[in-house]
Image (cartoon, rainbow, N blue to C red; front, top):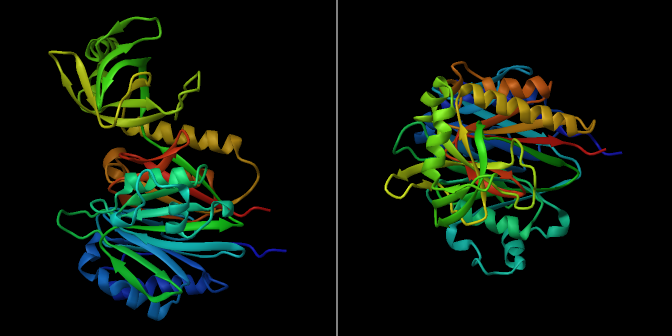
Amino acid sequence: MSQKIQWINALSVQSSLEKAVDEVVEKLQERLTGNPDLGILFISSAFASDYARLLPLLLDKFPIGYLIGCGGGGIVGMEDEEQPAEVESSPALSLTVACLPDVDLNLFHILPDDLPDSDSPPQEWWNMVGVPPEEKPNFILLSDPFSGATNELIEGLDYAYPGAIKVGGLASSSTMGVASGLFYRTPDEPEGCFATQGTIGLAMSGKIVVESIVAQGCRSIGKIYQVTKGERNIILELTDNQGNTDSPLNFLRELVNDLDTEDQELAQHSLFIGIARDEFKLELNHGDFLIRNLMGVDPKHGAIAVGDRIRAGQRIRFHLRDGNASAEDLETLLDNYCDLKDELPAVGALMFSCMGRGEGLYGEPNFDSELLLDYFVDIPVSGFFCNGEIGPVGGSTFVHGYTSVFAIFSQPE
């Protein structure tokens, strides 16, 4: 009979790196019953000048087989065994460790020049990652936002490992000009590495289940339209479900005029476009749209620009975002997940949340993490506030904005 997975998090808000490392190590050693196979580390950008010292300090006191981590403008961890904390404006160090019996780990550091060409066969991606597809890996990806070539990487991983879960985030900082920082350690590189470019990836396969929840934080308004004319990221013409064809700007004006006063005000600064990603799904519901920025309008031609490529035939819907919409979106997704979930208990979770969420969006601290643990009682959650969040929508993986992506880990029977 297999041993149980042990998944533990420790958080420190000490302003000294040495004291923060000592505190998380002490907390983990008090509860850990075996040697950890994996460490997942997130450190505040307040420590950016000390990033290069982090792994030597940590690994000298607390050896870990594999480690992956990055810097963030805000850090998520557990204040105690029941209470999560989203530390957004002060130093923090969060370290999750896991004992993973019968789980295979493979860690890779990829620079943009390492990526196979777009027309390369899947074998080249398998060779790059070092894991064959029959092992059915799932992935955690931590990427530098400026040199990670993240979109190309996740498109390639979707191609080479269809159906695999890919979650993660782009490293961030709370101030401009501060290095984001990536960290990793493998048995082949026992001293660990601090990198400032590329993407750190972890492939997990074997007796562990990884599932994802992607909360884009919007609510839909108005009709579903089909793009009848589009070029690059410009929508030139739409058709509604009654067969009426017009410019997208005219449809949008009509929609906004029908909104109540509160939503009209919200549409002035928090209007987004949802793009349906499943071409074959007849009835589109909550969560079926990939949310993208509305970049601008052309009053002369009635066109609108979207923060993604557009093509004729795609279906779109306008969305609004605010704190209430984000809360309702996450609660709906958690309800749906738990309704479909079997009795397999979760052992831990990771949270990758946009810098634009948190207390600034909700007006109160710890909202997303506390809501998550209302549904998943007695599991640790850790993570960071990202410069872009990685998660799947409609069977494909994307880099999102204003989103919270959760990875839920459980052990199969």
